Amino acid sequence: MEKVIGIDLGTTNSCVATFENGRPVVIPNKGGYKTTPSIVAVAENGKRLVGHVAKRQAVTNAENTVFASKRLIGRSFDSPEVQHTIKTAAFAAVCGPNSDVRIRLHGKDHSISELTALILSEMRRVAEDYLGEPISGAVITVPAYFNDAQRQATKQAGEIAGLNILRIINEPTAAALAYGFDKKVDKKVAIFDFGGGTFDISILEIADGVFEVMATAGDTFLGGEDFDHRIINHLVEEFKQENDVDLSIERMAMQRLKDEAEKAKCELSFSTSRALNLPFIATRDKRPLHLRTTLTREKLEEMTGDLVAQCIDICRTALDDAGVSVEEIGEVILVGGQTRMPLIQREVEAFFGRPPCKNVHPDEVVAMGAAIQAHVLIDDSADMLLLDVTPMSMGIATAGGQFCVLIPRNTTIPTQHSHMFTTAHDNQPAVKIAVLQGESRRVSENQLLGEFLLSGIREMPKGLPEIEVTFAIDSNGIVNVSALDRDTGKRQSIKVTCTGGLAEEELQRVIEEQREYEIKERDEEAVTRECDRIESLTQEIKKLLPRAERLLGSAGVQAMDRKLSAAREAQASRDAARIRGAGQELERSLTTLRGLVTP
Figure (tube, rainbow, N blue to C red):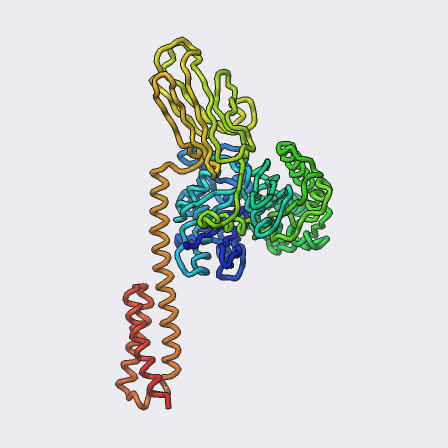
């Protein structure tokens, strides 16, 4: 059976898991860490850096390092969320050709899907190193409240990363799969998923291996990053009052503050106070200035209490949509790193009237659930059924700027629904179908997913033509819409493509560029490994050469020196074939030396 993986594509950290020996297993990266920072950077030489290596150079290369790109994926450049991010980020963002967000790194513009693909590629490589074979099939998780555009853009990122996306599933649902796997669970559960960039709450009913999502709600721009920003803003303001210096205009200083804020936030989950010390953070009148202060848990809770209150309000919405009372919830499961905050745990317990379950790993459970789902999709014997929902209502624009809902939010997917519409004017030859997603009754307050034209309508008085519009949402939550003129039989349809994504031609170009870059990287890694091997062989030859000098004679020693010189020149050339040949020659020489010095 082919190996498949589950990837938790996180805002702050990402995680990959597979299914082996009947269990989901989280795969550590080369450094031994089970999570990898979702950070991408481009070095001055054009090398793409991902994960820990990108994070380590972030302070000195802040303008070419991208954090939390997941918060921008599938969004239009003019959206409030994107504009807010641009104001606080060290990197430069520009508007792309599809009104999407492009990040400018060393003069080249990159789409968010392209940058996200680098993280997914890294997760794939981590899995391949562990499993010892190429991987293509994957299940990727997304926040439950991701809209269609964000899901489409994530799917594009998977394609760029060379992955066959078996399914895109919601993060809380994946967590529920991991929680209920291989257990006899018969209860309603609430998955409280608060990560680095997003918040989701899903209400599920689990019974006899069936995982049915009853309702989901969330905010795709509410997460741990916002807690970090509150700390950063507090430190900037405090430093400005004390020193009359504004740190917010210094990119390197802001990056140092970001690192320190994140560490302080994490430490305050188990300590009541934390000293912050950033020497030489700025200068004034050619004098160095240092940031030294103390942040208490009480102060952090005071600064972020409103963010936690927003989460609790969203929980109320989810329960109302599910038609479930707090008393009917049998378990509350905490997912995501931000749920380690004591204030969040207290508020969740107060709202649900029960202590939250802590027997799942908040950073790993989503990837484990994704791996379980990936296994179920390729193993027909797997006895598990997942019934997920669409997070937001979908429909079309009608006369008067009204939004007509065809599929209400929290409808089980996959699903399909049709509705009959007509023309608004006499002899109208065509109708424009505008596809929308959202909860407002007004078109202008919902998100436009796409639009298409149904033409060739026979001339008739208004109200007589019958236009059947059909919405179909697949198991990934991605939308297809068609319109049929019942009189003429003419049909027009679109697979809704994300407004903040890549056009097909550009997508194929980026896929090819990524493939070429990966081939080049593999070749470079192979050359580096071979150079390291030559270095090791050289050291051993130099160690043995004095002992074999008498037996080799001066001519033999000179020949050996020439081979060592040739190997050094080969290393400097970075020519793979030349380096390989030099390495083979040194191996033969070493074998000869060992034979001479061995009694």
